Amino acid sequence: MKAKDWFLDFSRGAALGTGVLPGVSVGTIGLIVSVYDKLINSINGLRKKFVQSFLTLLPIALGCIIAAVILLLGYSRLTAWRPQAMFWVVACFAGVIIGGLPIVIKEIDWKSFSWRDGLNIGIGFVIAAAIGVTVVILSSNGIAINVENAFLDPNANWWVYPVTFVVGFIAAVACLLPGISGSMVLFIFGVYQPVVHLLTGENSILHNDVNRIWRILLLVILFIGVVSGLFATSKAMGKMMKEHRRGTYTMVLGFIGGSLVSMFINQDMWAIYPSLKWFDLLVGIALLVIAVILIGFLVLKKAKGPAEKPEN
Image (cartoon, rainbow, N blue to C red; front, side):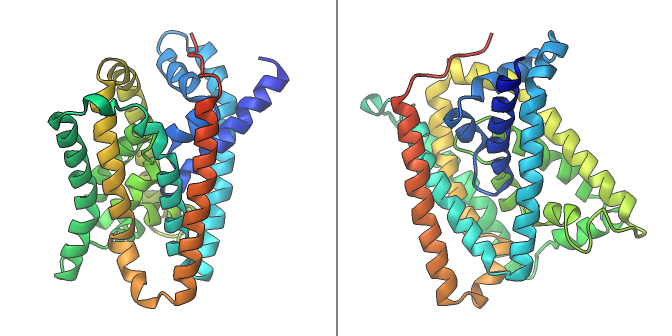
């Protein structure tokens, strides 16, 4: 690979790294920067052409990891400085989701829209919305599960290990679908903030204490869940997108709509609403509108450009 192409893929990977923030869809960003097919095919190619696929993925992965770490540090410091800033971030990336909707909508043949398509959208919406709403209802009735504390002392909360693997697996699957954010999946399950705090802050794995080894183990399990999700579903996802594209995208559209509900109605967000000021609402709304316009412009510009050619 030429140096120019290597750095181009590195910059594309950095763009994918923005998917570490709740609401940013790696699939959507991948389509915008013309690296989605290369990513899927390279993941699938690791089984048969490991060296070639690994070298193709290397600059993308490095760019993604570096950008993700920088963004996580920024997000952590912002919310530590002002907890209400979480609303700004969520509103901004809700705008990213809405702005990216044309990518999903254009894949659905609305002229032959049937009740089955409507059912798919409804099922996806209910499943995604129910996650955040159910958690809020449970917490309002004194049945809240403190995931943050469980992550700080995972050895005393054994359930956190299988849950972390499953959520990582689901998040990886979500990353492969344009329009859905893997980090958003972590967020609406209440796992995003605890994972961020494992990497940054006073309780991160950088600080040596009696539970450090168990918190490191949690991150390893999350990583295994993500990798397992990518390997287990990349080929199946590619097949679904080809053979059941319409059904997949109608379900995805419903899931996106429901996810928007869960982004604003979940345990973490519900806790900060009482402290929001008019200033926070104004900033959040402004960021949402700006994100919709910016991402919508990029998506529409991409739609008018030449189609991305699949990698062999």
